[in-house]
Length: 187
Image (cartoon, rainbow, N blue to C red; front, top):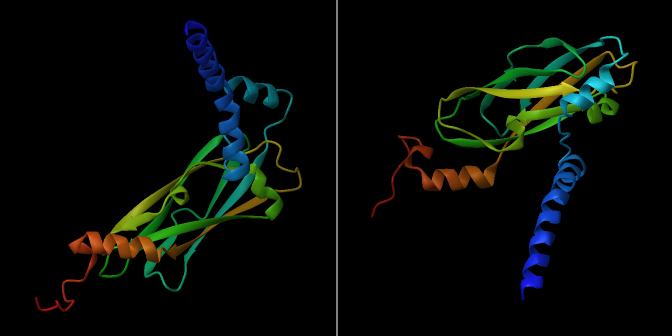
């Protein structure tokens, strides 16, 4: 019995070490999220490489079904590859109802998308805005130093879509999800 318990303990210990690379693989291959390199990896890659700067353009819009205003707070940014940067996008719910939206990102040119790494982004989860609410939504990103040398400009664009299922669920749970002027059913 003791041998089984020791075996289970050793197996659990080995599994905990195996989860780290498995997590990295899942993030990169399944979710398209590249995790930051460690400080020692970053120094090794940067040694002997001259500082490289790239222009990042920001764009944003909404699907016609979503009554939101959505745009970047900053149109362009000069970034040094390999370093983290932050930016925000402005969002405002123009309707009289609580609405849930989901953002779909895209990177252009397409061949640069594998080198544009978002480490924090509002696009990772659905966003709920109350009627008339305004919010700045953050994005933290790093341009991989391995970005092809001929790519000088990268465009990060988001399109927000109304998440009908989550909006309906939100409005059913919250009396604030319906407009004050909506007719009430007789009991």
